[in-house]
Length: 419
Ligand code: HAM
Picture (cartoon, rainbow, N blue to C red):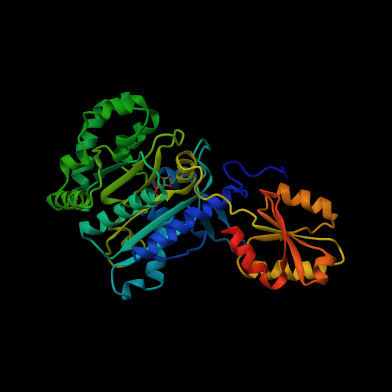
């Protein structure tokens, strides 16, 4: 056990970590340009927040939460998602008192106790954005456009944007009722999970992956069939802005989401080639969430993208992206010159040159071999004879050429060599 990580978790090792940094830098630059500000919320929250925020009749709350009692007998839960925490933070920190909308983004670990498989983990990471205080369809279109822009900048292609409306409290009753009326006489044909969903959360049946259910809902009434005029107008508005932005989409009348807070817009970004789990991201509008958390009625819209799935696509489509930076200079020393070598090393690092030296007492010959294994581009050899002349030897590892360089010129010579 001591040498095995918990099921469904990952070690992100050197090599892979640079790719993560690349994606994180992309998120930061993109969100800064789109004027979204970062928020960092705790990794755990009061369990109640997710029970109420995400909804009690959802897979996340019923089956997937890492819930524990702390030593003060409080029930806490490792966050399974970032939207309810963002709504909580918006309220608790009175962000509603600032000019609206508030546009937030986050990158962080989420936790769901689900059956691990390709692209599905128990600890995974999301990049998400949440916009509070904007009810217009422009806001929906903006967050969708931001998600798609992220993938465009990363150079990931082959994604499909699926979009739907799931109605609002005004029309939700009609939507559920018509679906129930369709499903009840056909209940026997549904999968066991959907038999109970048909009563408690009939919308979820629409997106069940079991063949029996998928076949059955082909003719079922969809939310759009029973949506109120306001919801229809909103949906049309979102689609119009997507058209203006030149973003292709697929209207998927059976798209519903696994979290209860959604109103009106729901969308998913799908890819092939990330295992059975084809959704790289999803989101939508959640106009009732802040109120459920105890605040004033506040519209909200956002998305979260799975970073593990994004990285799978990136690795597949752009294997060169986010490559580790190469060791530029290795400083080798013949022993008596160790202190000077160390000073040179520190100076080079301060100049931003990726530099390293031996830390284990290798001989000069072994240091050269080691520098070769590290694939250093240049080795600076600090020998006593040259040092007495105020110089060092600079060796290019690709050609084997070497020259003596006065210490005062070293930085310039290296910069020119490394260009
Ligand atoms: P979600 O659809 O549950 O939405 O998750 C968003 C994305 O996180 C998924 O599309 C997937 O890429 C990734 N993801 C989810 N579960 C796992 C897992 N077990 N392993 C790996 N990746 C996973 C939400 O979380 C909402 N909070 C999104 C949102 C934000 N809606 C509005 N604002």
